Image (cartoon, rainbow, N blue to C red; front, side):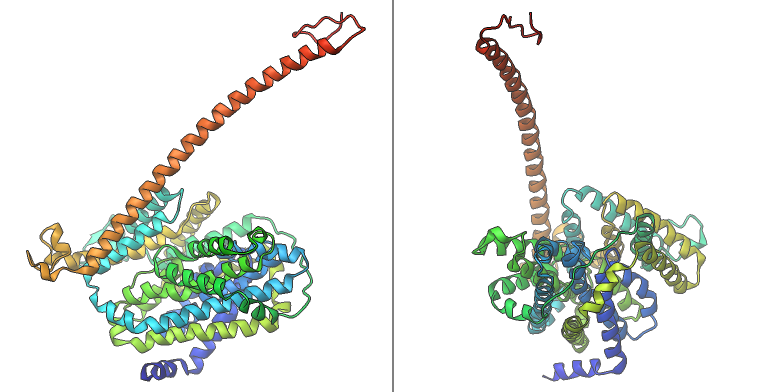
Length: 548
């Protein structure tokens, strides 16, 4: 109880509560605008959070991160356009409800499911916080290196069908992190005697370029779409009652969200599809899924809102971000000399619990705000894309310049913005670049620290030579997981190629057989035509369609 009270004391400050309120409402607004998303908003706000206290800056970012998916469900349900990428599955059952005149019911159900998922994940993590505090000290340099390597591999293999491109981009991110002064002996690397490269490539500059500027270019080059809104009828409180009739779907979906959120590189999409598949297979009316099923909407929204709190576990316990948004938050820790990892759980457990309590309060604030402000909030969907693009462009360059008052940073950000725009048009993910920069730095530092006691490969998992009693179990488990993930991925690639070859063979032979069938059918019809015509002097000639 003392831990809870000390955590509440950290939160019970006017600036923290104001930051939480601004972040939560701002996140809903950002999520409700299609084409912006939380990554853009967090990237723009990052420079401003560096001048705040750590708890204040992180609370603002957590507010945007945790509430954006609430707002993203609004355009997904009303106009069949997800506000954020993770709300794509919400359109499957949310928009069909709107076409039936049940828009308010769908919104109410989405809000209620999101609220349950967020509260469920926070409660689970607060209950497991003592266990995490005991496990965290077991992670040394070698374990953190293996965990970072596992996270990087999971990020790559999560991009199914684009794993090779994702791996190349992750390696490019690792290379960007090596530019400048190396962290141990401070020797210059890849600077080519250019003074502006001595400080390295700034992570925030790259983030603003790849996410904010690229999105601004994308919106400016597109066309403004005319949005037709549907009228909302009925109450928004009915979703809470309807959610209570599906406790099994909500509970399992929340569990999927928590588990997938704690695994780096997996995130909302995997949690959503696992939850949606489970709900459909166990439903009494599976035929309704995709046509306005309340269970499908509950599964999608519960799972994706259970992920943000769980995604903070690898970030806080090991200092390893699992996605771009948590990688951005990691920079706030570093600016304020707060190093996430085992020491944070040992020495500042009240700070960790305060962040979880902030997420708990965040979900309550967002639900109350949405229940009373939805009618006014839906108007933000009508904001023109080009106006948004211009606003994001200006704010991004202001944020980049404010970092170090450098025009060079603005040029670097513009280059990465163009590069990110090209990746976006080609549907290639940019997230591996950011995670490569962050995880590459962690891997380098921890590997060089751990190699001081490693003389051979087995020493990586054993303290001392030949002493079997000093095996490092966490290192062994992580190494086995890395090998297992790689084997599963290569097996999946082999099966995909096998299925592709079989599909090509079937298509080729099917087209050949179909052509032969058409030829025979034509000859048959021509013969029948010659036989059935009586009383007329017709001569059947397969090469001629005339009469003689």
